[in-house]
Length: 69
Image (tube, rainbow, N blue to C red; front, side, top):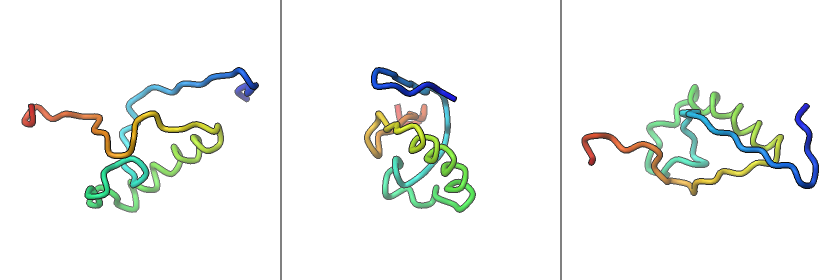
């Protein structure tokens, strides 16, 4: 188990590459397939289990395509 005390901190970094209405733009509904939502569900469970919160606001892009530069 991970120790959780009043002064503990936890930071997860990585390319989780998951789509979900909690953080993607509302107009990106074509990304929210049942399989995608299911795979994001485990990440959401872990966030809730450890009382974590997302640092980026909903809809903030995390990838800029070369064509849009």
